[in-house]
Length: 354
View 1 (cartoon, helix red, strand yellow):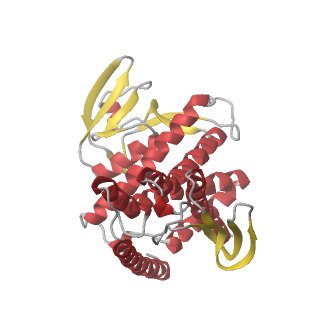
View 2: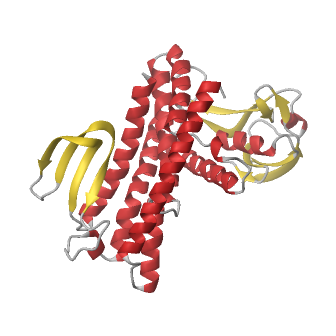
View 3: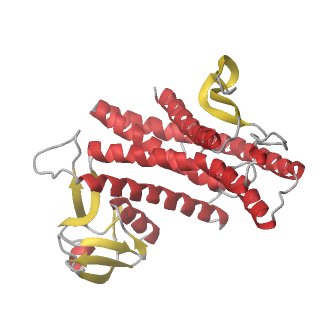
């Protein structure tokens, strides 16, 4: 079951990405030759009145949007290359924008359905650093270890990065900002400050004694959760670039499917609602990460194509299509090699229990 869910999640993320390109292309007057649901051999196709082939492919995994003149020069006024740079930028970035929009929309639903946890202190645990440092119930945590805090996950991330070292914690108490320094306490659950923060309920888990989340709070929580996903993705990339972690630390579809399977097995014990929320959380997380990955300035990715458009906009002259095509092809080949390596690494981790 988890494999089916993984295929559906990845498929939805890729399809919404390509749909972003499709909608932007149509709005910018670019002729879309084909919009496909799925990949591989064509099972069904229908040509619309505007000449676009809408098709369903054999493999239920994502899809694609084929625009005229996307990868070659064309004199057709409806070709991608015939449009002004700013229109092509919109089309190229529309896929990533849709990934972030999907992640945000899903997080709004999750927040409204199951509630969320804030950064406002509700209780203190006796004998923990927060109590000794003078933090009180009602305080709102603003930053931990120099990292801004908007949601509860920001606190956990900052503590994991501090790795037990003394850190500065800034809180808001009434109209004041107070600063204290403390050393997190190591427990079997990791490093902790010893605070419990306010939890709001949603419409699926409303219960006595727990306040319902304010309507606008859902939007704020969804936005800052997406910011958190982006920050952690960029942090991981930074660690990879600075060689603090190796490429083997990355996870591909197999690794993600394994993690999703574990989450599904855990959630199914608590019923359908728990499974739904956990799987949607995976969808939001993966969609935001796909958005970040596609923005990287690497050949064959949207970010790489964006770089070429910026160069064209600055110098008023495009890079030769043949040269750009070769660079994108080389980048695609390297990405495929990396994908195979990550796939092998994921399989070895599963085989060895690593």
